[in-house]
Length: 460
Image (tube, rainbow, N blue to C red):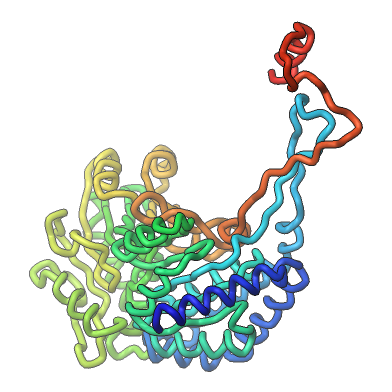
């Protein structure tokens, strides 16, 4: 794509938005209905694409991608009328007699840039929110998941005209050309490094941006935890999609007294969930490409592997791997892992956990396995992170009733459900002032003591 093509595409969507076609709720509901039917009808093709790109099974593809998109569409169809209505707010006495309210309106022309790890979900769910809020959208899926990008492009073209929603495929050239254009909102999901570039480019046009990034999300296991259950749920969350999940537990901070017990249970759970040889399990999945495979292999300190570590370079597969006796200086702790490597560090006092997590910035997620009410309270109130779970992993992002997003280095803004509608909307504050009464106290000349006293009273 060249600059002039991108410019023409953005202009066509801007012109379409200015016609007001996307504003009626009935239009948005019709668009969501079309999308729901198309996704439902093409589930086999979507599953096939996800299998090709990431080795995902049909069950995982539906559970973690397709099903969640359909759920978000259902939620929006149910609530869109309520979200779109004006909301009355209290009016101060000084504005008597008036009606004060907020009105959600679409930003306008939006750009959605999605990653490769959940290529269908993280493309379509923001698109659902953008449509529900009344925007036009240019969707740019990742070049690293080409099969899914093609099915998304085909699906969207079947549903919508290009001036309303369109998909641009390609790599860095297309990303750069699109970011040269002026949008009304940019929604980006990806790495912190690319997120910084997106925000820098958005700032050139003073364009607001929602950034869903990542970071090293800790999983804390204290001495009071149910170790068997903790291991079961950690293994599920960590090795889902081969660890290529932005909210996967990146590493474990384990109380020293339960470390060996935890490692024993983790080994049992990996075997129970993935079989004695995960690399022969057709449902286990694969690393997205050789570049990321080689990066992950470079993070494995062989002398610290206590379980797993097997690799299949030809298939870009790495078995679930546990690393013990890890220190903060080890290579695996120097970056977000984004793969099936699980380092274990230990602590003696919970205060050490707080200090360690704080020193690494603000992760996208944090998890705590504990029965200790005091430590649960400290996790809730003192640890900096975007969202998380107590005694489970990753499931906090599976509901449309709560927003999902990061904080600080892990992102800005949130989406899912109402938060998603609001992310793609500007909330206008409006006062409807009645004409039958016009209090004179605000007008010059300011000479009357009565007016001044009344003004003080009204503004209290």
